[in-house]
Every structure is written in C-alpha cells, then in structure tokens.
Length: 311
Length: 313
Image 1 (tube, rainbow over the protein chains, first blue to last red):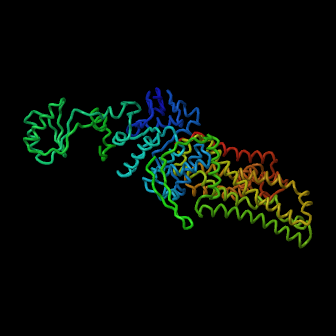
Image 2: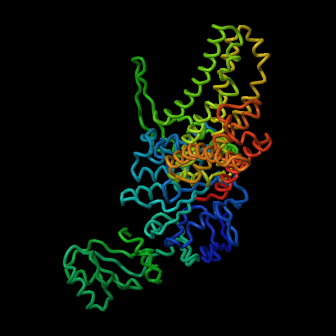
C-alpha cells in the first residue's frame, strides 16, 4: 500500500529544545492515530507536514510532495486545528463556501460542496445560523466540515474531541470513523487520549519527547490476552473460592473475575467451579487488552490524560 | 446508497409522489483552480467585509455612512458651484474661489482617515482573534498571499471612496455648465489629477491603517490608535514647528501625518490646499515631499508584509 504521508529522519529544534528527534513513520490509507502527551511533538510534526514549519533536518512528504515546496498540494489536504478557528458572525454555509473557494474550488462548486458537507456533518438544518450561537459540539463539527469541504485525500485532525462532553465526544468519533469508512478519506488523528485513538484508529504512532516509542496496528496492541473474564449473577464469592480450590489464578473485579489460563483446560475448571458454587453464568470470554493498560505496563502512563474515559 | 424515502408533493391541487434517495458522500471531481482562486477568495471576502455585505445591518452602517457622507460632499460642492454659476453667470464659482477638485481631499481627508481607521481592523483583527487565519494558512495560500489580497481589497474600497465623490463633482460641474462639452474640454486634465491625488491618499491612509490593525487583535484598539495618531500629530507638529522655525521646524512639520498625502495632492494640482497652507513643510521641494510620502507608504507596507510573511498557525 502506497504511503500517503512519509516522514523520514525528521528533526526539529527550537532554541535549545528538540521538538522532534530523528522521527520516521509512514501513514497509508485508513485512520492513523498519533498519540502523545502535550509537548510530545505531535503538532510540530503536523505543521511540518503542512509546510508551515521547516524541519531542521529530514523530510516530510505528503501525497509524494513536500508541502513547503509545492503549496498547491494543500488543496488536497484537510486540517482541523485543536483551537477555536470559527468567526462568530458568519453562517456555517457561508463560511464553508469561503473555505472551499480558499482551497481552489470555483464559487458554484464551492456552494454545493458546502451544503453537502454540512449535511454529512449533521448541520444541514443549522447551516444558515451564525456560528456564534453554536454549541461546542456543533463548532467541532463545523471545524471538521471545513477540513472536508474540498474533498481532500487525507485530513489531519488535531485533538478533534477537545472540550467535548462524553456524548459529543462519541458523536465526533463516529463522524471521524464515518469520514474514512463512508467518505473514503484517510485520516491522521492526533490526540493525547488513548481511548479515543483505540476506538477510532487502525494504526497508531506513539510519540514521547519528540521520539517514536511505539507504532503499529491498534489490534496488535489490543490483541486477545490469555485472560478469561467471567461474570456470574449470584454466588460470586463461592465461585471465586471454588476456583481457588482448583489452583486457578483469579483476580476479582467489581463486575466479575479474571482468570488466567494458557490453554482450554481452564474452561473445564471454570465449569466445575460454577457447578459447585451454584453460580449462574452471565458472561464469559477472552479479554482484550486496552491501550491504556499497555502503556501503564510499559511505564508510559498517559492515564491522567485518559482518565474519565471508559475503555 | 441508503434506503429510499417516499415523499409526497402538492402542486396546484395535484398530488405527486416521488422517492428521495440519499446518494451518500460524493467525491469532488470538478476543477481545482489552485492558488490564484485562493487569493481571489481572500480578496473577494475582503471586499464583502469592508462593505458589510453578507453581514448584519450593524456591519453595514459605518462603511455606508462614511461613503454616503463623502458622496454628499462631492454632490454638495457641485450643487454650490452650479447654483452660483446659474445665478451670477458662468465662471463666477471659480472666480470667487469655491472649493473644487484640488480642494476636495483637503476637506475629505479627515473622513477618509477615520474610514480607514474603522474599516482596516475589520479585515485583519477578527481573523487573528478568532483563529480563522489558521485555516487560511493551511490552504494553498501563503501569509504574503493573504496580506496582499486583503490589502488589495482594502485599496479597492479606499480608491472607490476617494474617487467616486470626485467623479460626482466632475459630472455635476460638467452637466451643470451651460456648455458641458466645452467645460469637459477645458477641464479634463482634472480627471487624471484627482485620480492620482486620490490614489495617493487612499494608499497612504489605507496602508497605515492596515499596519496598525496588523499588530492587535482588538478592532477598537486599532481604530482608536489610528485616529489618535492622526489627531495628535497635527496640533503637536504644527505648534512645535512654529516655535522652532527654520529647517528644524520644517522637518518637524513633515511629521504631521495628516498632511503627508496632501503635499502630494498640492504637487499634482500645482496648488496649495487649505490644510497645507500654513505648514512649514510645504516650503520643501516637491521631490522631498513626494519622497517623504513614498517612505511613509512603502515602509508601513513592508513592515506589514514582513509581519505576515512568516505567520504560522
């Protein structure tokens, strides 16, 4: 698969501070998450990709070209910034039309693309209202819509769920997934929230202090573990005791129990323990590892950033 | 394609049934016109902002009020000249020294300065305050493209504001003359003169106003600073220049910001307007005054360009 974005040995130094240190990675079709704490170098990498910053060394090519050398390539890129970027006294329809024209579309095409994009972003009914009266969730949708209005080949999203409540965050993540699955637009999704990246992305690149510390398919990080998760309706304590009598390694959780087992013999032991404890089985299955847990285990704890997010 | 939805429409008593299909997301395969389209979009947006087009009524009030006042001055001057000529005979208005093309900018310059002070911040400040500039600069557009397009849009408006009243004045004087063709034949030279003098005033005041606006995100601060700059520099330099006298006084008088484009107006019309009549700087050679004007126009333009050239989100 050809890389849409290719970063090779990229280094960016500001006066005495190394923002990116010999970073290399590629982004191909799909949703790629770029994960890291604030200051990890995510935004610097995006700015270099967009041609807004010159690297100290190395190269960043998007769609096979360097944006700082060929500015017209930006007409095929979309960018959703983290911070506010919407004028309050303009309607969403007018704003998106203007953004489409800024990306090189003729006015008549820009108008129809603006209406279509707002419909896909769920703002069709609100398109003639000044954006100053929009909720945070609606503003985030307009920010995403302006990045899509010119039908880019790849869109770069910088913290798209920033400032959203749980419901708004879920809607935004759905829209991001829809952008790739239904619209066929590839996405580079920058976030410091592991749960968002895990639930949305196909691949992940983890940056820390300007270096890539992990990269690969999200599912390879969250593959099934050898742990079995079991929930029972009643007699949980008796069930745990019965398991321990059979020398099964058990960890209790508020909802159920985790049982470690490398082969299928553990299922026979669980069955016997359930019968002995007379505990009705509600749920049983292999457990997937969460990204959050993975990085905690490796000593790379982003948990402060992802606290409060169900995983 | 998602499932079709049945729909019913009524037209002239006849009910027609149809099916609405959501054809889903469609990729764009139309023309992409690149950087020039982007530049033009910024320019067009600048024109609309300056005139309040596509904005609420509040945004339209101030620009159109100033444009209206300037038109009225032009029309009023024409009416006065026509009336006097009609009552006292052809040429009376000129002989009694009624203000005409060479005097118009002396009368109107203060209104144009205030118009520039109010309009220029509208073009630059909200884009930076709201962060919209971040969206411009990630499109096929550089900081130079952005500021050049905004400047060009503002110059278009400033030129319109400067020239239209003069055109009204010329049209009024021509149509009001007993021999319009004869009048035009004798006075056509005023047209390139007022175009030149108007361009000088528009470029100078517009560029300085944009420079001031380029350094703040608050429109009110930019407007107040610009008006203050012009208001303070006139009495300050005039009074001190009179005190000092000699060459020092003349040079100090050159810092009267309101007079800088008016010296060019005087040079173009080969006349002295009311506002420069007592200015010690008027005694300098024309080339000094014109060079001074270019310095005060090109330097702010350069500073503005340098500021926006490397602007990044």
